[in-house]
Image (cartoon, rainbow, N blue to C red; front, side, top):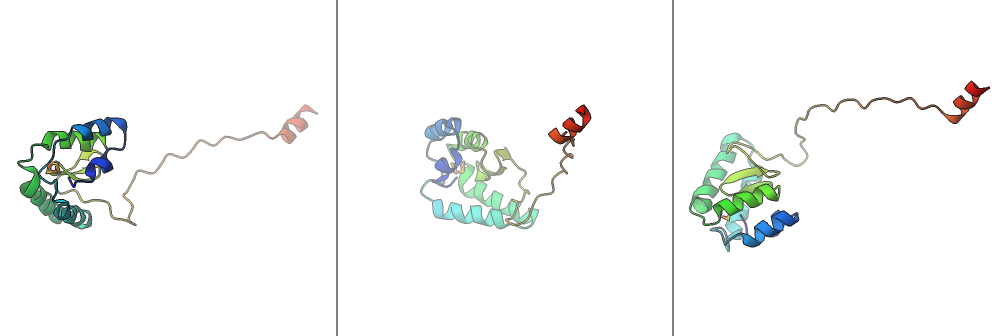
Amino acid sequence: MRPISREVLARNEAAKLAAAELPDGACTRRGRLWSVLERAHRRASTPEEAAQVVAAAREEFCAGCPALMACHRLAEVGTYTGLAAGAAYENGERQKDTWTAPKAGRQRKTRPKAAAPTTERTTSRQVDRRAS
Ligand code: SF4
């Protein structure tokens, strides 16, 4: 987790409390390298590439980090998307190592929304005609 992640993650009050209790992690004061990993993960276009970046982050930083569990909780509570606690997260959900982040300009396939129920409105003019 890069140093600014505490603020990024702390989107709600629960996350702010969790962030306040987060001890310094192995990535603290190594934000530049962490940012390189985050960027590489966002840009990974294949599952293998994404898994390599997650493995690098885990090995270089998270495996022996004293903040690992707190970092995981903060990622969940803060609905974080990115690398944290030796894994990739999307909206606070831990993903498989092979998960690739959605790319800007590309949309995820989503289920089509159910058609909104149509309601016919009766205008006041129609009401007037029926009354007469
Ligand atoms: S678990 Fe990883 S991302 Fe979280 S604070 Fe530790 S080194 Fe940083």
